[in-house]
Amino acid sequence: MLAQKIGKPHPDNAAGRFYVLDTCNGCGLCLTYAIHNFSFDDSGLFYYVYRQPESDDELDDVHKAASLCPMDAICDDGKV
Ligand code: SF4
Image (cartoon, rainbow, N blue to C red):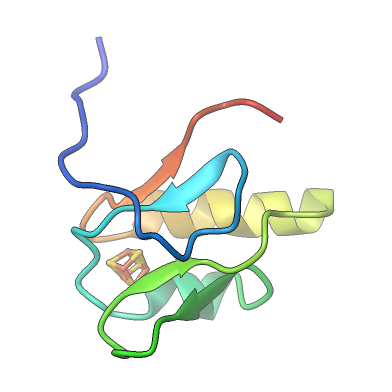
């Protein structure tokens, strides 16, 4: 059984299967790996899914970002 993640989705997440939780620490790693899909909010402290992946390459990028997120704050509900 997978451990349940703690936190609430950031309100700026683009609607869709991927989203970032408010446990994000603002490190920016996700933007480094998936520049087309993540951005930071007005505070500059939190990142969110700016655009859902639109290609297999972007999907790979987002999966890589999720696997490397130090806060485990990037979620995938698995629906396409
Ligand atoms: S990699 Fe994770 S902790 Fe770092 S900015 Fe992105 S969502 Fe936040």
